[in-house]
Image 1 (cartoon, rainbow, N blue to C red):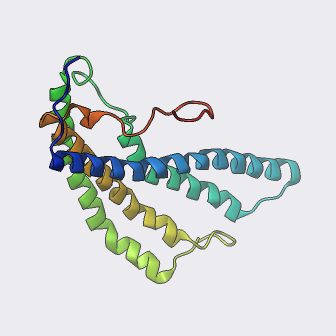
Image 2: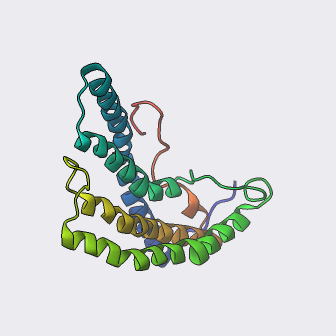
Length: 198
């Protein structure tokens, strides 16, 4: 294993920035993971109340939709940062070198991810603002009043993805500039159980 040349000050700063930004989505993603458990428990409660006691509340049912939307809309950037999205992989993993993969990731981020995020922000802004102005609530009687908060996820999702896009650009750019450690994870690998990170 060859030794890597020491990083220049600008490279070290950029790498620290990438790791700090990545930690934002990491923290959000790990926190949101608890919503999956909450969704299961609330769904179980809805079913038990409905079929065992003939009880039901629209707000309780809608809360599952809110949790589901929050988990996926805010967790998408975390998933991207962990490289866990579904990838149609013909050449990337098996035939491309690390440098070729870095180029694919860098160009994909600059030419696809960032423009799509900016487009979503551009076309969704007025829609979300109108919902905020009205403090839009559920159309169902007894539903949750925070539809305007739910629609805010449409803007938060691309913002978090843009943060992750900056991380990808910095990491892949630094890697292509010779900084081999740029693509290593800033955090210890996650464990499947409740063990501590080393």
